[in-house]
Amino acid sequence: MYFKFCLVVLFILVSLVFGESTNPVAESTVPIVVDNITSSDERYVRHEAEYAKLQARLDSGGKALDGNHPRQRLLTALYGFSRYKDLHITEVQRWRSLYKNVSKKQKGTIESAVKYTSKLNTVEHLIEANDQLAVEIVQTGLHFYGIAQSEFDKFVADQERQGKKGDRTSVAQAMKHFVRDWAEEGQEERDESFTCILNQLSDMERSATSPLHVLVPGGGVGRLAHEIARLDGFDVTMNEWSMYMNLVYRQLTQKAMTSNSKSYHPWIDWWSHHLTTSDMQRSVSFPDSDIDASSVLLVEGDFTAVFNSEGGNYDVIVTLFFIDTARNLLTYLETIHRLLRPGGTWLNLGPLLYGTAPFLQLSLDEIISLAEAVGFRFEDTGDFCGDLSVDGLLVRGKDVQYGRNVRGLNKNGYLAQSWRAVKI
Image (cartoon, rainbow, N blue to C red; front, side):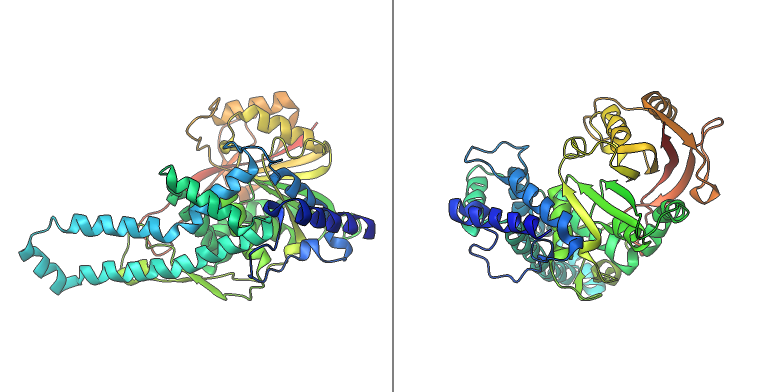
């Protein structure tokens, strides 16, 4: 273990000498808790090795970056978070402009009754408060990933010169996962989705000395993976491609946060479906529990590529709100089958909400037929995963929420499909 740790330290020292772009501390004064590359405890061995692999994947080799390179995607996400305030203030300014279409007489009535201009002003102030969190995410990300401030500044300047703006939607969705995954307000939503999976895992035979190896692709900002780790007897790896999600997760795990020590105003960017203005403007505290960063290993990157050397390494693969993110769904099925050991279990729960450009879009019965052709045998999950969806198929449907404002007037949810399949 000491030899492996020395290799990681040597890698970082070489990076310091030969390139500021991989300097994890250059031009940054934010204190970061990077236990996964400094602790000599045995439980950090995989974290240390994965951090070195991550740095290697981020290395541009001095070449120009294309849009799919991990470093380019990371810089793009950092740029988005760095422009949180500008992007959201621009939207409020658009609302102000639209309000000008209301007649002067009507404005008098509106201002007297509901103080609409004050509402706009308050939201601008709350955007500034949220921006402080977004700035922290950027600084934590720069430090953790070893991006020098000068490199980031140059990237920002290049983006602005080309007239490119940050991705407001991706930033907002990632930050809302502070609520979905790590706030008390998200507990009901998590219970609906997690219970089916956690109950099945709890019944699996394992021990601290013989843990089951679990992989959670599409892990988002990590709550399900951490809940699995809390069951004990599981060695948990999660995977996420989105750099926006990964930056939020690093913020949660690299900062020494106590329970409910941070707050965020998640609902001010969309003014529909609110009972009261105070509901819309309320803050949500997070995290609702302590986070043991060492209990889960995050492997960043394309699920179908970053585990190429790990065939048959996992006893269980858990896919939650994941399989419909595939460009090529068959590749997902083949990858899950390849990574499982013979007799290993695949647990799934989620909708079939395909993206904008998938190579194929399959109905539920087609997915089951294709999975059986790949080499899976389906078993019943049990009633706690909902009712049987289709006669003759061991698949159950369960109503679950996703990203819902619990005080809002709309319900964001799906009849998520759940199954348990064993690798033949």
